[in-house]
Image: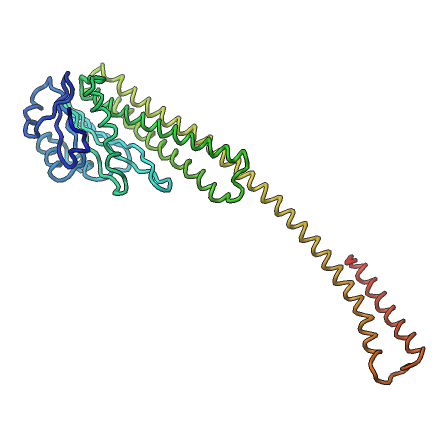
Length: 353
């Protein structure tokens, strides 16, 4: 039984793919095995460091640019075609905290009788086991007899197929989240905190966008491989097209789900904007009504203040014309009536009453 790549962290794991499964061999035998054209060798490097890079350069003679790509993080998929081998860089998505999508890198060298898989540098916050999910799955299939690869490209194709299946599973999980969010929108359960809910929608939307981007880059890599790799046997060219089609399927599924979620976001934003518009109109109407009420109150206060002011003046214990006489009472009453009537007419004309 072969060890998983994770168990051999920071080591060069050498496997001979035989009918009985995977036979792990010492690193010292690698040169001898490479000289056997009928042998199928799988070299898995969990994390490429200095000594591992020397193995890639000295034993295999890989180009320094390709070796450097194994040592550094690459942000896009790529491919280099050499006389005796092909080098590819692929990524698998891993959703982290806050909706951030990590690009988990897998580098591959495909030669005439060997496949070298290098697990690229990881963000420290990502669980290292994530990098080995696809290669470990293929190892288990070989050991249980469910997979019998006959060439390096068949082996590579099995690994990439496991990667695309994992991407499809991730899209299915995001589609389930999208469905739950859509139901909450339709039931109107999110009006208490619309900003936070909108962030949830955009987080899922972004995760789908990241998966689609990875799939588009990967498909472009295999489309280019089909055109440039002349040494690829005719029997294996359909595998290249199949992988390109798989990545196209992943991209289409992510794109379709993203469009659906975009529709949910637009519907939610439209409903929220409509509610805000209605609330603003109701607030404006209330403000207008309050202004009318305040004008009426102000007008009546001014009118009522007139008799108060007049009676206050004439009520002073100070001698004045008509003081203590009926004429003074009549005069004060006429003054109050005249001023109050004048104010009433003025406020009426201004439509305050």
